[in-house]
Image (tube, rainbow, N blue to C red):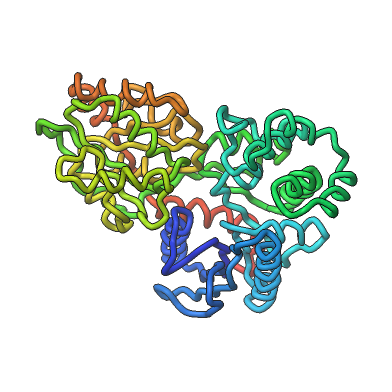
Length: 436
């Protein structure tokens, strides 16, 4: 069986979903599946990584929306050509630009079953975070009266003006966009038509997908509410990348508790909230090490990063931690922090913490709250609450026995080898027997 996987980035550039795909194809390859990777990135190239052919099809990111749209169309054209060239038995999308869904909307269908793994809320939410006006969890069901003001506010439009856009017909908005100067107002004027088109594209993608994998229950519920048939959506939670969980973190009795954060250093991943909470607790015997790429950190964090270089700093920024070192490094800490401020489809860092035997202090939001049970294997903090994080940090320093209780339940046995078995079973169910 031959499977072509479309991913956003691949070796040497990787994110969480690409790390997932890398582990998945190792498990599939061990079961006799021939894997091929298609990814975005510059320069276009063909090479082999860990025995797997990789086709880099060009970048889809650009400095302007017009150039980005053209790059996405070029990527989709090359992906279609690769499908023809490779003749896969399954096309498995872990990433796709909107132009790919547009091809489906216009009637094109791949000559093989299409499988989708839902790695990011952006599949149904144009804000990308599934938070209504950036504050409260959203259902993910498209509603013009709610979605247009929400997206317009994210683009910086004042609330009264943003509230008008649902009532502007798409045809009028497009005519306004043609005469307005380039800028936010022009973008928002055409937003109604763009959102309607994007939602149609998303529905075309979901209709064309023979099987849809989701990594969390909230995602399955949302897609079913959006009209995807129950039998086509399967929850397949992430597994660890190592069949051997290794040594579990032991209870430590040092004067200061030590916490670890692993992720992007931006507002979506929530590390500014931890900084603010710790600033309110100047004498708390606790320190946190944040691992993440410093070169892409939010500008608001630059002063904190500089302050973290002081020998007595309690919040330190350590730079990127290689995937292979995360669990091993976690063994030396007392707890993990997962403070994301948007829905998570894993999140893998919770699983890594549990593999290391660490309890997790996490945000009470979809994905995280399916893995972290409050006061059982960790502690949940309300979305966006600096006070909530302050209280959580106070609790574990004043009652260290809580960490000991939670640590006994911080476990994760599922591996990516288990995930590969589930994915292969789905492939077998949709690929004709002569092609397996």
